[in-house]
Length: 107
Image 1 (cartoon, rainbow, N blue to C red):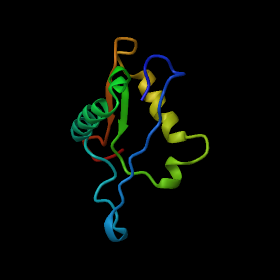
Image 2 (spheres, helix red, strand yellow):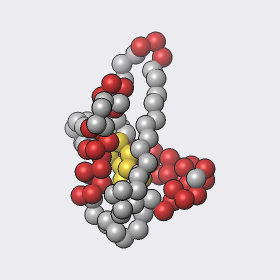
Image 3 (spheres, rainbow, N blue to C red):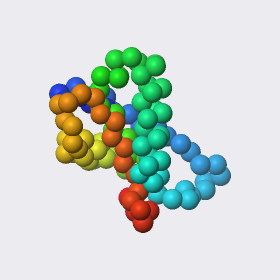
């Protein structure tokens, strides 16, 4: 999450582990479901940390290998920050930005 000040941000990862080493059925949620998930996460986060409601929430609803997400230099987080900076509405208040799969199911 970050507001219009790029020096102010908080990085986070939600980890979900599949039972029995199963593979995910799809690489990412469809965009509309990613948006619904981001709305619910944002609502719950604002209840836990009220100040969070003043920040952008950027969520990638996709499966990542833990080594990829935790790689030195945080390339996944940097890519999300790039997408955040290019998204419309910057400097117009907090935004909820969710990224998922396209209509073909590609990330």
